[in-house]
Length: 312
Image 1 (cartoon, one colour):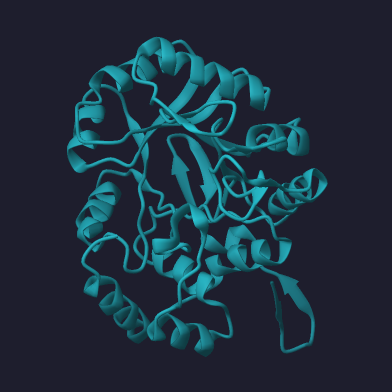
Image 2 (tube, rainbow, N blue to C red; image 1 turned 90 degrees about the vertical axis):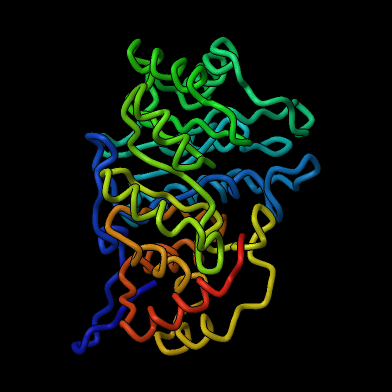
């Protein structure tokens, strides 16, 4: 997306406009890029996904970096037949720029057909996933590894295993995904947590508002996923947009996705965004959302919509 000055010149909005946050000791722009949608067209994380054109996918990654994105979120289980997000990142961006931060996650697993398998719960299984990410990305260490979980049981053994890999130098920083405040407290007692990646957005989990703010108070980045897709989840944004979102979008001359991203970034300087796309036009719009300033009245309107939801 570009903006036009009074002199008639155009400038491209880059990720730098979103501001910066530091993951541990790794500075990143608050608008990043999520790689989940890259390996396929249509819904992600399904066995029969249609592989995306490889050159087109790599071109999007390179364009993201050209637009100032220096935080990419990925995982070894992001793949479709013929395509792997990690391989695409490696082939498109290696040798990696010094300021590029690649965040990955472990826990979930899929078999070679793309069907979900049992989560990694043992130290051996988690180490295997870390090593697979290292191999696919062509790196000797991982910048940030998020432990993604399901359920509410203790994560001490699993997080402790990752903390040992951090001590061994395979991982630089640790994060959590799909967790509760109790999980965060449990992990923090074992090793520092630099980010929490949970489902969140306008109308999605308003009951987690306090958790979002508490992460900021602790100096921990909060990284919403499905901030654009909302209830659509891994299938993408498919539902009709509420009138409130459409009204704000029309006032700014942007699409609903940009409004949703901007709203999340307005929740605190510690909130990051990792929108994913395989479309270069959508990519530019997502990046430009980092420069979108919402007025107090617009925030009140969107906040009301958000809090009226029961759960997400």
